[in-house]
Image 1 (cartoon, rainbow, N blue to C red):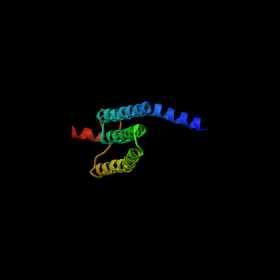
Image 2: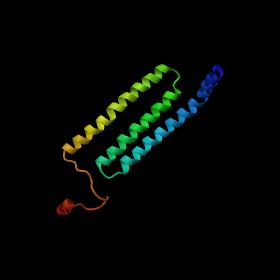
Image 3: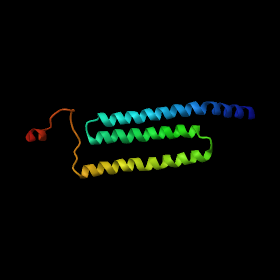
Length: 124
């Protein structure tokens, strides 16, 4: 039994750095995809959705990758606290910004991009 546990710990030590690096890379790619979504989407609400969802998930994957590569448990605990704060504040901040935009009268774009709306025809 001790040999199996020793072999498992050795396997974990060999695999954790490549797995952590891969997770950090995947998280960075998710954040880049979110940035592209912010630039490509047509209105505020879809841009905010792209930013909030992909940045939160990308940061989570990066934090998991960093926790795998952490040399000490104290660092893992600090990363877990960062994840917890991010998990609580990011959705709340996105909701607050969307609520403020809606209260200010910002309407979402409905229909196809480039399609004229009925209220646009009266202004032209």
